[in-house]
Image (tube, rainbow, N blue to C red; front, side, top):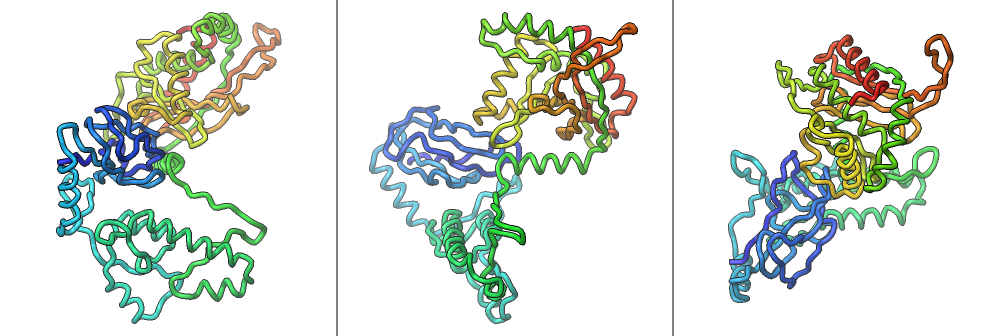
Length: 438
């Protein structure tokens, strides 16, 4: 029988993805491991390879649609199968009468979906009407119902186009789009009319302006939503404190200028970051509590040094990880950083490149910031903020000299790291950068 390729569990708590685009169409012949399409999760855009060789019979989700873990993405007629097998397969699917039970992703099995939902109303409806709607049968997955709540769409008024009349995400989005069109056509109505209509059952007016003028509403989703949740977890969990210092990097700047020309011959972009990464890893060996995490009542000291580099992209913040820094030289680290940053900005970063970090570095110096208070990449115990190198007058041996100074901001989890430990770490880091000890 034709093979139904279901959206796999890729880990990291990811339960769904958006089909960015298909790289094949129905009727195409494909080979095993050939990319079928690009799928965006809240971590990255990944290419989904074909598990089989054969012919594409059906793409079950349109480009732009949402696919959940366990749902069928593609049906493939394998090379040894015939068109008669395909016909038999689809006829069998069509005649299936067993209730559709959605995939839950749970290790304890499947949870049967409730067939009753309550209608969504902008105001309280009469008791008889609420009872009638509660008793109505609606075929929709929990994800669809959740989306309907977010878009204020009444599931009872939507005709499902899915199997056995099931309401799909596309159905809800189309219904919400029709509602928005109606809203736009009436946007010039008076405030009195708006108040009157907003009190009617099943109608909720979402204004495109506030008291002072027009506004845009942008949904928080994808990477920004995931990062926001992660940052909120960090700031409300870890006891965060930030120490700030300046390091004299005059000699380091001279060293970088010399090596920069050599690296350019190999198309390697050399910034201050590879030196900072190497120096940080060296200091972490002497100050292990800054390379740790807290699990319950145990502090986990990591014996490896994987440094995450925060990368700003159009879609949000990514933190790809340079692995095994202790075993790499400056050139290898520079190559890794350049590739990881490029992949992150192109949303092509491998999922494994986002895992395994033990300490993070965030650089806002490139956009002119000097000191700031970076938020820990939880559950790590510390993060280093790197500012813009600034020329300043500094007293050295009783004389005033113009030196290049690098602002550093170290935020740490005070439950794990004491203030004195953090200060000693920073002192050692500044010394290594000043003396170019890598």
